[in-house]
Image (cartoon, rainbow, N blue to C red):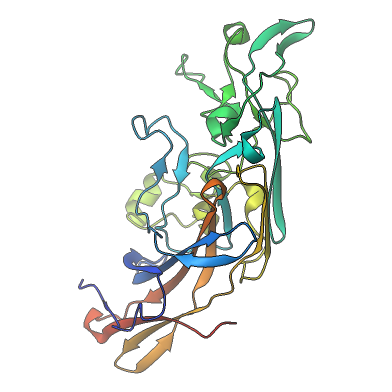
Length: 342
């Protein structure tokens, strides 16, 4: 299939990056996913302005690029058919203003109707307490990367027949078939202050980074890949595939409805220059497909907000799906341009 062209007025008034990605729709018909991505900088007064540097990613980017198979995801891939709502994802670290050391750092990430609060500790280890394993007092720290590796979780596959896993965070700290093996090992440093970790019992993962594709709750939406799927659907997704699988943010940071711009963003203790507070930019893009019958608009949706507070940047990603005509040659071009401010 030939790739549809992009109208030449694509970047006349914007520094946004745009990509057209061929993709099968859920019904098996070909479609073109239109991705529009813009990066912004936030100054110390809260003023938001565009900046070049937005990068459309075609694969997940791990925190540890030398060991991607065991690393959590720093930047999720932008490629998927559609998302039901907006992901809010933070790639960064807990750090107090002016890098002031502390034994615990309280983090807040709030965008419009969603928020996540975290308590981030300095290094601490497991030790034998009076009622089981407990965590030592934290050491002072200047900065802790907000990676899932530092939260509660983990996996133990020593017994292949009875694997042990925290499906919400299989790369974290605290899961072991024999808890005695955790003594003197590093303990989780990131927790939800509403559910503080005082031992192994009842501990839950907490974070603000992207979830792995095989983690819960994403894995419950991927569908059933069985023999019937091989016979009747492959290479299409299973009939019970749910597009919520494409949402990469933690559940608390997936908005009830897609964001539209103007929502208040607040981030505390993730930037050494101090807290960030600003309204989400209000931008709208036109996506139109020119075919033999005319120009049809396919309105894009803002479905990803990626925050990097210590860089004082955010990336916004809009997505639109353009169905392909049965004869691809009948799609002459896809037109993308920024609308007047809304």
